Figure 1 (tube, rainbow, N blue to C red):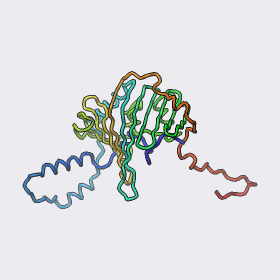
Figure 2 (cartoon, one colour):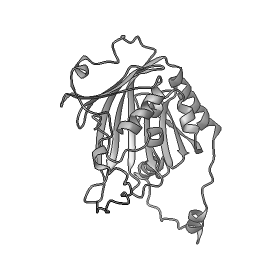
Figure 3 (spheres, rainbow, N blue to C red):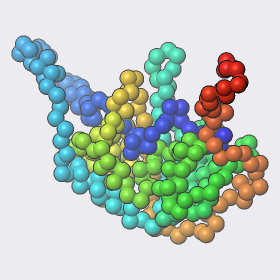
Figure 4 (cartoon, rainbow, N blue to C red):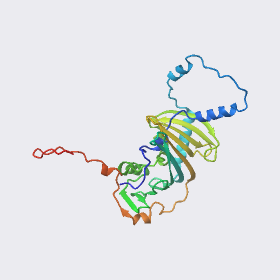
Length: 303
């Protein structure tokens, strides 16, 4: 059983996970159009030439890697990778289908602290069950304070490898993984097919940001990057093969790079004294063991 609560359906990283849908900026353009029309004299709508819409829809969008977008992604990734220590707050919202059809939105908040190359702490107070994750270079510890349960396992010597192990062994996943790996741009570039610059925003993160959209594998991501400090402020993702086109979004704040970190920041005395449970996937008990053929002198049994 894993004591770290996962978002329903969250199976991929947020660089994989902040993914893409409809063309970014359409809502902004629509709003600007509505504002521009206020007080303007009424005009007759102009119909497009016959066949124009259908012909445009039939034209496939050609993948393009704009150098300005790539430069911004690299600059942001380099800023994160160069930090020896780092802390930030991530507020993640994700949609989940409701019985009525339209999706519901759920939100989690995580306080993240890391020290490269081998220490990570993620405290998630809510919404949902609180959880704490510690990695001190030797051990991965997942702690559920409300139930006072802890699961621990020996860990590999890097943050990247520890995150990989936590995901495969216990289904522990953080949608901001792309922000804390050793080489964020490497993860983005793997499968990158499209990247383009959208423009600037002055309303996200309390600062001026540059907006970039990119497509990597089956994920469409729009990200807001600080124009001056190159730190991510928001990321929004959609999986292109998701028929419901559910949206995943993360807000990043309280960035602190190269801060002093106490030596005991990556362990928990409370977790050390909690009741222990196996470090395993929460659905492990629901997965039937692989069937073996019956012995020749043993009758077949119906499962």
